[in-house]
Length: 51
Image 1 (cartoon, rainbow, N blue to C red):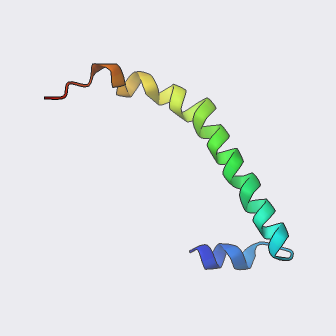
Image 2: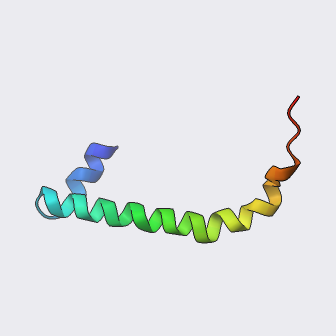
């Protein structure tokens, strides 16, 4: 899968790396500011009971 992604990205290797870094940053931003706050009331990590 990663080889296919690497092949479809345009440009030399450094442009591909830059594109992947930016894409990873956008994904992490989306997770931290949209997905995790939306799902945190559902999970309720403070109510975990370890025995």
